[in-house]
Length: 322
Image (tube, rainbow, N blue to C red):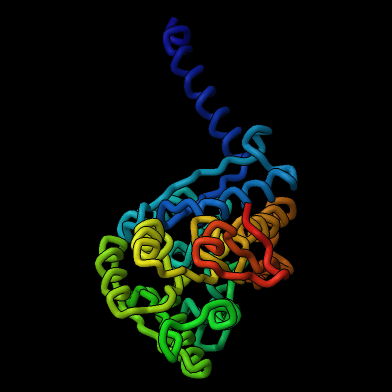
């Protein structure tokens, strides 16, 4: 009789153990997004599409993707990464620089597949012996492509005065943003362009800082590859359009949102490239042969509506965004 009394409890324990065992057989991806953004979100779509093409999808129940978004809050971002590390996920997918750096700081063993992030050197995560973190993989970008993007402007736009004046804002607390600003400043000097660069610390300051730039009679605005710029782009665009100042950028996603033209990485393809690496790891359970790769697909694109508004003729080798 005593045995019968405990049968329900025994059944629950067996059921729990069975479920736990089933869950442990399904690889778990911890996907970390630093902030909410329409352009950046395409990387996640590309990443999951690459997994699906390689046979891994939640619909087939052979993978589980735990998604968390820090909404631009650093303490929340840290908590998200700490949670995934404590849960011992099979791999981390990190979108944008802050997510990748935080993951690198929190784990040396869980494979990290980065996207929308700069090279390890630009993230300042290279060891004293000159090596990248052993658990860092995915697709990364250098700053050289910005040269091409910025150099487009004097070819497409005539100055109001004797010299072209271009304005930009940058996040001084973001290494990638500050590095990009310094590179652009050096390039502007070579191209005989006056660069007016103003710092800001959050997207809440974007409208005020943009208005300050516009008061300096700039000919164009250059949208820096910066998390703050991504998050506040519609605010920047509205202010620039009202002042009749075109926006150029190095990010293809921002062209879809209203900038005139860009030469830069396709965000969807960026995520897809990182997803292909993650799929290879999931198939083999090894990271042999994997390493941070440079972004493979860059595009010259333009926004027909924006180009028409500013009466800008774009070269034939630029593709119109849909």
